[in-house]
Amino acid sequence: MISSVRSRRLLTYAVAVGLFLTFLAYYSQTETNGDSYGARQASAATKNAARMRERVNPDAVDSQPSPQLVELWRSTLDAMMKAEPRIQPIKLTESVPETEIDPKYDHPKDQVRREFVILSESDKEMLKATHAQMIQSAKQLGPRIHYAKHFKGSTGPGPRGIVMTAGAKYIHNAIFSLHMLRRSGSILPVQLFLDGAVTDFVRELCKGELFELGAECQSMDAVFSTTPQMPKLLKYQYKVFALLFSSFDDVLFLDADCYPIFNPDDLFISEPYKSRGLITWPDVWLSSTSPTFYEVTGLEAPSMSKRRSSESSVMMIKRSTHGDDLVLATYYNLWGPDRYYRLLSQGSPGEGDKETFLQAALMLGKPFWDVRTNVGILGRWLNESFVGYGMKQAEPREDYRLFSAASRDKHDNEARSKDLQARRMFIHHNNLKIDMPKLGAIMSDAMKKNKQGQLNRLWGDDDTLIEQSGYDVEKAMWEEILAYHCHPNPSANGCTSLRTYFASVFLQPPQPQVQQ
Image 1 (cartoon, rainbow, N blue to C red):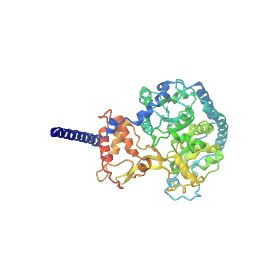
Image 2: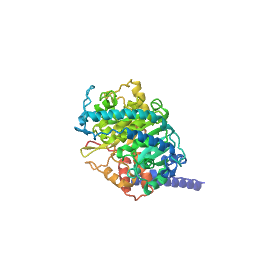
Image 3: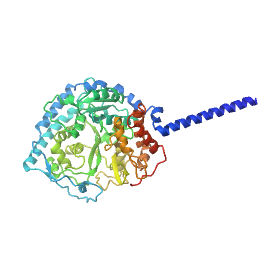
Image 4: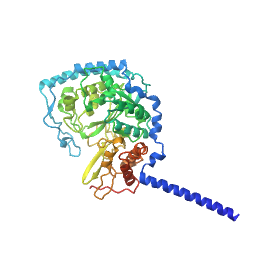
């Protein structure tokens, strides 16, 4: 009897020791490798993407556009070509000074909108005439957008989804953002519009990894090739064409380097989207639109404090109700470089497509909600300099509730106070683009130490984002890279550095960051 009791005690002790040693081994691996997340947990990205694969077509990348889409596109391009503003490239006396548009400076509420555009009276009259002509065309073409059919060979993913654009250069940025999208819980289908040639490299990714993530590739060149008279496009002009060619009615647009913190799927069935059908987000800067633009279009020029300039990495639009302003925005973009981009931004940072969507809606009197919570900056102090890595944008439903309750419809720069700030929902990692095959280059930046010889978070040590999100978003970003890039390929370029960085920064007691 005594022997039996002793045996049971020894067995219990042995089991306990074994469990303890197993825990130590597991914990040690976590501390040293930092990638046990990928080894032990099936990612939500895979689970959520699996639900989408039956709704997207891996062969869509080689499909030809439908006759309905070709007819719409030819009619739209024909109208835009007929309304081309045949003027000299617009010159500026100078780019708008930073002191004019940086909100950190004191700006009077009645600050005068300054003119930096050089434009002859004859060119101004040409702009007025062609703009008025395009307004009429947009009103006729807009109602046809909702009925454009999906590309041949597609399974028809439905009226609601996410649209992105990327070419070979940024396609891996889009892949990473899709991982983060699926991790958020989103099950929306994705249309990724390719803004360049469909190479074998791109085709393989479209039929493989992108399809696995519930994304369907579409070739914009397949549409453009039906109109040989199409002018050559530049970098910032492609986005609006993806929105024009999409088969979704309700669209959440995300740049290739932009992803949500929370599941965005219910934004479509909530205010302000339900009643407005268009949501835009703010940039850092005040508006720098030229007085000449308002003279050309006939719009009343608002005060500079009325609203910030726009930041177009994220946008929502209902195409069936905003078709005419989408066509007008396409016009602003087609004739953007040296013309409308100059009028809308006057050389300010980020000059490109960003102002075209909101201004088109204003021009046609369409409802919209421009998010009033200021954009936040992601970055850290390093060796006496602040290094910015990206931006964080607000949750639109909370923003709408906050500013509606505060009767802030007539919002201005002063109204954007710190006590009216919605939580964050979107990350735009634009200054350090996450390209997993180029992890080595990313880690060479991340591994820079401060004067105390410490590794630090890229986004700084402000815990506000963690508190608002309910989880550590920056840590999750690195976890996703470890899971999908480093765990399957432990010796891949940059992975050793990432494991060291992750263990030092996220698995150790936090070290306060001070201005270096």
